[in-house]
Amino acid sequence: MEKRWGKKWALICLFLFNWARNVSSLSVTVSDMECVYEYVLYEGDTISGNFVVVDHDIFWSSDHPGIDFTVTSPGGNTVHSLKGTSGDKFEFKAPRSGMYKFCFHNPYSTPETIAFYIHVGHIPTDHDLAKDEHLNPINVKIAELREALESVTAEQKYLKARDTRHRHSKLLLFSAIALS
Image (cartoon, rainbow, N blue to C red):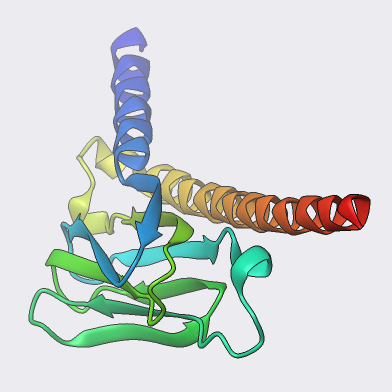
């Protein structure tokens, strides 16, 4: 019996390690074009994330065209694209495994700081699971819960980045009022 529980705990730890390994969060300064690369192991994996231009309210005027965001598949096809935005969330299924390219384009020469977060999620099928009667639906439920938790974590990071942007703009506003 103890040996059986040991296998289950080892599998749970493996899932958690796999989950932590597939998460990337960074800050990128974009002057013209900057790209980030992420390898996707399995066709059909869910790629999700978000980005926010941190200094948006401070430096952008109403005529600023925004940041362009493009995701390119290993075959060179555009799988996701956003034009003229100060931030957004994205999610799509990978059409194939391989290296994906996430590019930000800033049409203005003023450098922009972008908080960027990405997650590649894989929910194993019954075929992917180990025997012991495949530890049955429990492992699939664990993977689904892991993905749901990842979604909540991604939302928190997105909201935190937006909060940082709003705090920057309020600080600038209060500084301008204090100086006048």
